[in-house]
Length: 380
Image 1 (cartoon, one colour):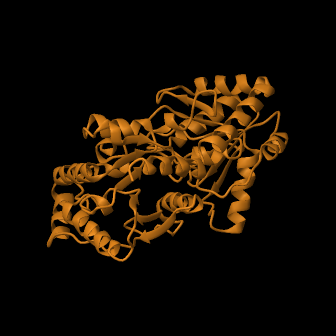
Image 2 (tube, helix red, strand yellow):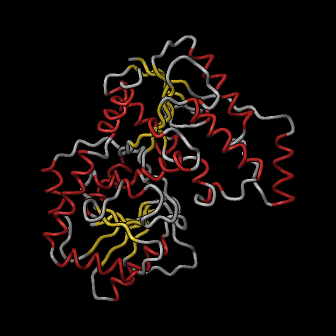
Image 3 (cartoon, rainbow, N blue to C red):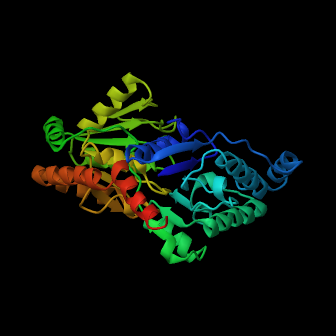
């Protein structure tokens, strides 16, 4: 089966969208599909768009989004249609709305993504202050895409509900297939058991891995680390990807590593060591469509502490591969859970092994693309 993999950027570049399209398409290829890439598309908007954009920002503090623009989406789809003439694909797959929103071809279209526009407005800070025009066009483009798709596949139940409840998509073509971890992992159960022997029995090591301090609620993570210390529990907090506010005085048990690139051998070694030796990935997101980082943590037998919000509940299952808490959960609630587990280390080890099992059976790209291929076979 030949697949056309359509993205506005280069889907073969691991730096785009945190590597998700790269690992998604690689999973399809590793599963025996012939993948042809359609990407690096040019953007086109209406004349005077930038003037309108600047005026909206100046006059109303609103953002006129070139990404959520009907003319831009139509131009993307025309480019995909043109490139399809020389590919002769059996099916077109895209993790994005725009490349296929106005694509009218004989082959079935498959959208495989983590969120739809309506669910991101008022939820994801990146979509804040969109103008009324952008909101209207964002919803139009999304509806056009969903109407053309033979399959609308989402990484979480949360995203799927948006398709059903807000956009009114036929339930027969809405499916849920979680994403996988964006890393090359060859761990076996024996490797995870060895990692557990490396983890301290006395000092709880928390790993906060995020580029966004506020959106991922680094303040809550820091408060929990301080609360654990105040209770007499030895603790280390490792912060990777971002820095706390400059006016924040950090205790000696908080280690800031800054940004660590997974594209360098040194970076891989450093992140791998942190994942192996930490007890919990602690990312209490205030906005999250899915959370690839939780899949990656589970690949190291690392349970996740996070919030019950967005698509996270399709990744992290309570007492299976971590625990989800309410947005308003107090540091004490987190502390109680952590200390209860650590008091009986066998319980922690069981959770860690269960977390790895979730990665091995569900939260990896091989499993994900096998599931997607079964769905595609039903429509071809």
